[in-house]
Image (cartoon, rainbow, N blue to C red; front, side, top):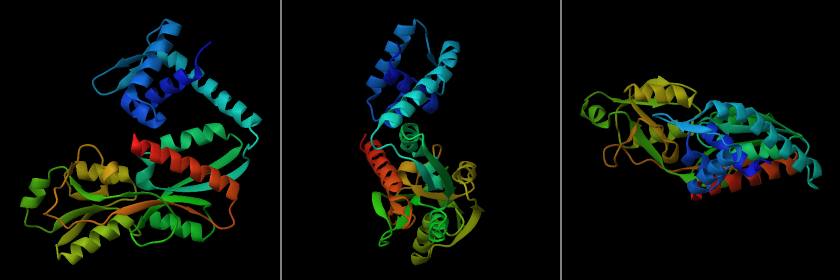
Amino acid sequence: MLDLTQLQSFVAVEQMGSFTLAAERLGLGQSTVSQHIQRLEAALGRKLLARDTHRVVLTGDGEALLGHARTMLSIQGQVQSLFADNSLRGSLRLGVSEDFVTSQLPAVLEEFVRSHPSVDLELTVALSGGLYEMQDNGELDLVLAKRRLGDVRGRLVYREPLIWLARDPERIRASTAPLPLIAFPAPSVTRAVALEALRRQQVPWRIVCTCGSLSGLTAAARAGMGVLVQPRSMAPSGLTEIAPGWLPLLEDVEFVLVPRKGADQLLVSALSEDILAKVRSLRAG
């Protein structure tokens, strides 16, 4: 019989394309994940994973196993939920900020979705300010987003420094033109922090790219169009952090969970605790 824990590691490696990232996602050591894969391959007598120049990929036998592995893990979650005394049912509308989605969301939500198949989870991705407006209008039950220092809305998940990023900081620094800024549209917490810092230090600037998706902003920054502001742990690859001293120091931001009054508090509490535990585990690991 196949070991479900080993199958979970196998699926995580396929999704993340890396043993290291899979281990972070599962809250395990990299050596443990590697051991799970080795034991699974030994049990089946087949090679399941191979490395190319950039990532870990499935072999033909790995492709054949993947669908069955996902089905088995899904059934496990359904059975656990069916016989759990605290089985959750209902619908929950979750709003998550754009930058968090591209970094940590899959690892945070995967276990909850699998463990609570009777919960209809509806996900909305937007800028933090837009999510708060939607929640105030009764459109979202729980929001995971950024807030500025001093804002008391929500329950703190973690605090994160903002940093300046560019493909080639020295080229931009050498230019006499106003600082080319790549930013989310308003209302954006990172945009507001960046613009206030530039105005305080009287640094000339101009917006060269506005986009509501982090992938669009990242593409512009990687093309060398200008400077991007992001939380340090969410800095896109291919960009370099600009050393302190040239541009103004940016204040930290805080990621928070904000429940809506009147929402199903049992569902909100369950998902909130899952998010808090998983995010803190990922950051500690």
